[in-house]
Image 1 (cartoon, protein in one colour):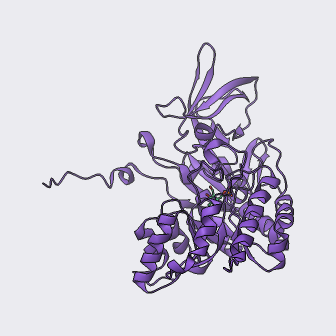
Image 2 (image 1 turned 90 degrees about the horizontal axis):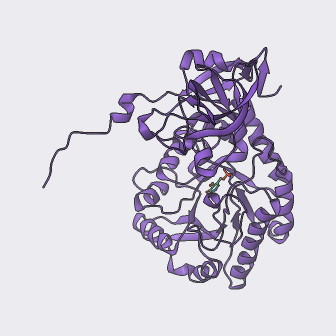
Image 3 (image 1 turned 90 degrees about the vertical axis):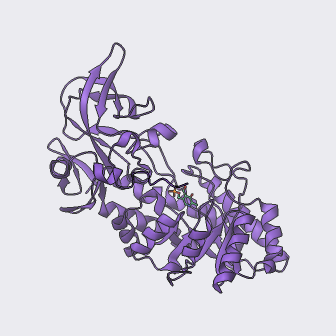
Length: 426
Ligand SMILES: Cc1ncc(COP(=O)(O)O)c(C=O)c1O
């Protein structure tokens, strides 16, 4: 059974009609399919099983606790990039040992929390270190707490993911990771950091990576650096290859996950032979297709040259079209008869960038119609904002013929709760 299917003119998620959900919880609302989330997690595991890769789900793609619990049930660990995501992973029940902590500018407080210093929580399994300065800080924090942190160095491998410039992270001029020469040099000086066990290497070159060869090239660079480090007499036992596997938005053709796994197998054959532990951090490829954003066209306006469906959410709920010029398929929840006409699907914000889709040819939309924005399960709610003080949408999980709210819609009070009268100090 397809996950999002039209029956008698109405879109359904699994065996629940989307308009029935909106009738109870209102719009805008993200609706996720539990079956699809499970299927996608299983597909990733099956594709990478031949190379023995451990899956760390990238929490940033969709951080709802119910989604994280589904990922845990499927045997995934978690890749987190902030103290907030770490808190979420733990709150979902993820054992510390299954957590990888990346993040470009981790603070002392975040590192202390990762090591469970004040709380006594199980330390995270691996910390991906992004800079020499972070390594020094982690060493100091760990020694101060009388523990030894397990860590990888995030390498900037100088491999272009050939994706949007805002989501390219592995080229030499990007802020991410440590350059290869410096990485080798740090391993040579590893004994200067007794509070840190440097176990291996990490890379993440961007997202979405449409060419498996690019992903594998970065993996190959890690293999080369590992060999150089070993030649200096220092062991490297872990390679974390990152995430970034492409999801096919709309008609976008993508390579199957097996093609990435196959390319990696060839690129790091020696590492696999010597039993190096391999990790991957997929997010988008699991969650993107499993979610839709439902918005209501509050007003429809026809200007001289363009028509607009002005909806109750736009870039505040789904930032990808505004930020990356991403294209998401949009359809009315209830089939509309009538002539096809071009229309922009825009949001309520005072921003020209605030659109969900531009120049789509759709059957005439009328005020009050519900629209489904597809493939919004990843980097939708997790990037949502309160700009113009619109409350963040509700989130709903569908599983077969049942559904549940998994995050309440924000209220106006939620948004003003932390503002306070000034208590002047001088
Ligand atoms: C370090 C790291 N790992 C994994 C991911 C997940 O990428 P994706 O959702 O494309 O798989 C990201 C995303 O930006 C990332 O920064």
